[in-house]
Image 1 (spheres, one colour):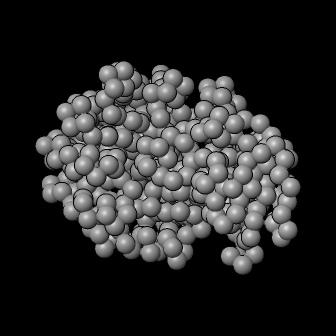
Image 2: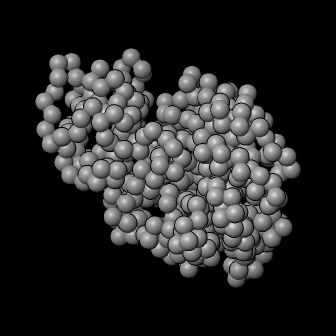
Image 3: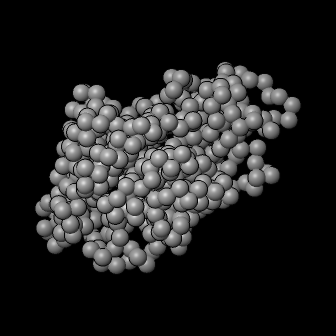
Length: 433
């Protein structure tokens, strides 16, 4: 069935479009974008008047927990959370139980995604066996099976010689390596940002240098190998400065920032709130300002959620014992729009770019644009809708934004020309256009 989205504000960074257009989708792809498209016989017409029409968002950093952690999330529930947030493609990190560290596990995730997911889910393969940081996985075989990138996320890859070898593989294969930039010797035992507040609260801190020294290491290795290193969830001003200087030298390093790091500071945990405990931790105000500056000047290429669900009981512990991680798929665009667009950090087209065109380009993905021939992956955003973050489609609710009031909400999400989410509901396949 054809789908005609009429009269919405189309924001498509790839083409530079920002204006009122109609978008026609047929056979799973964008067929036409024009000022006025007459509806064909049998086409479903969706009025987007007053809405923003965005390319489907691409989240290159999420933890869907399956296999092994299905009590906190599954590929199915995580994909529904993604759809509710306007995300049409999710890269699922490898730190499952067992890890995605062999071709069989890559096939498992792809098969389960085809069976259960309402959005596109692509596995990220582990760099080292068992995420142990000592022996490389069969990187070539996993890439051939369809993993979108390599990462030991959740762990910093401390062995620089091993990191160099991994980069030599990924360069030849043409896929990025996503690094969780953390020197575990410096962060050992830490649970929050190191500074005056950690001293006040009596909690062991994680210095910003635990991140920045590994960012510096990655810059040098990217320069040495010519391979693309993507620095995950950057949290400190020093890291932003290092990446900015590397880009000026045309070293192939890219970076992402998460909404919690450009929205909250360490003050969010002043009452030992475990829902604001994540790794890397929330930093100080200067670091938050540096993250925003890095987004504004293009140093930081991508916005990603680092969606990390946990069961409620595991977060209801002493702060030092609770696990790191917050959910973020359903608030990814809402926070970007609130904090960066309304906050005048980024113009709308640039904010959309960091969640669509840039991740598609850097990770060699087919979506991220609204142009003829592209996959018909689309998000409809109502900038006037007011709502409060209270309930989630994720199986978990470990969010520091519970109770926050938002203006603007994803109204519908379309994947491959099919409406998979609409006004809080997930239409059955036979009902979807």
